Length: 167
Image (cartoon, rainbow, N blue to C red):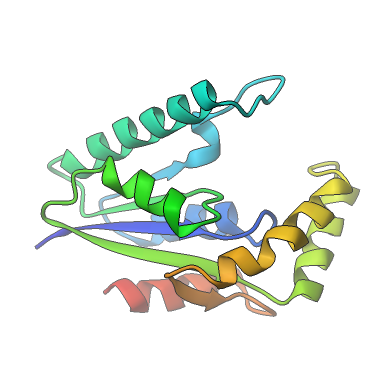
């Protein structure tokens, strides 16, 4: 039986981390990597050196998780906003004996705004996040991934849908 690599992407604020955290607890013998943890720096600087660093960090950890003898599933979430970035990440992974599921979490723009504004009130995000997420929304919609609509759904229902997709 192949190991499953479940890639969860989506626009900032759609619920990737929340869903992934619950999903990895639902699956047996499962590892979880939040891609944001591979590029935690202050100040956050986007340049070629740091982009290469994060891709190396992600591929190193994912390859280790996937090759672990007790691994049945690996959940990986990150803001992967194009098929080119997705393909670059996957090209660095040994996917022999691995079933890859590329899943994009989507919700309506109205729901996305509501979620991000809630995070702003909690001090988790700033007001610019709404604008940035809306600018990138259609990029995620156009990707060659399985779309899971999270609008108005509980975390449990979303996780249940993803489990059904991968089992």
